[in-house]
Image (cartoon, rainbow, N blue to C red; front, side, top):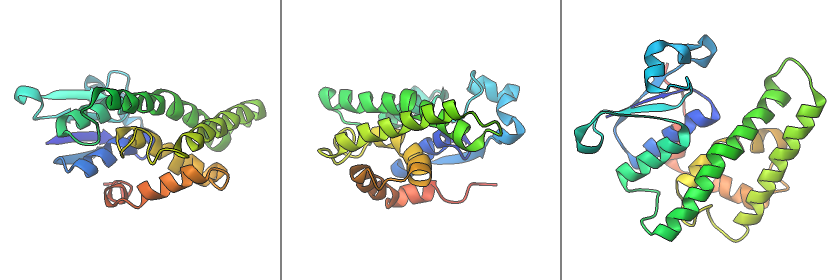
Length: 206
């Protein structure tokens, strides 16, 4: 059984998708960011940087209890645990890793800044808004060019796609639109239609 500590954010949905896709037994434990629940000492034992998501695997390697934080690390851990959505071939795995880390470290980080400055911040700072919107459009343009000749980011559907999907779904679809990015739209819609993704993005546990 895996305990998944998460919330309704871009990073928060990533392990939920992977857990639904793999069918690994799990339970969702909400960490209410609005109430600063991520600062609780007990949670910081699991996630030292007080960030969601984080998991506790009560049946880890050799039966050990394993804690993992950071969405990209969680996706990779679950892929290796399940043997799914992560290729066994070393060269193919390197390509998945490339996009997994880009999605986790670069894309989501900048997309979150876009969301802060253009949507959530009560302080309007046009230079910041323009900067992060330009970055978001540039990254989605990169994706569109790549997906023109690839069905998914790393070949077959994988954790690389899961690392990208949340922010495309939240900010690409809702905030800038995908009409100028037809390959991204095709990719997004194919993932959105997956039953596991629909379950993961369904009602959040109370």
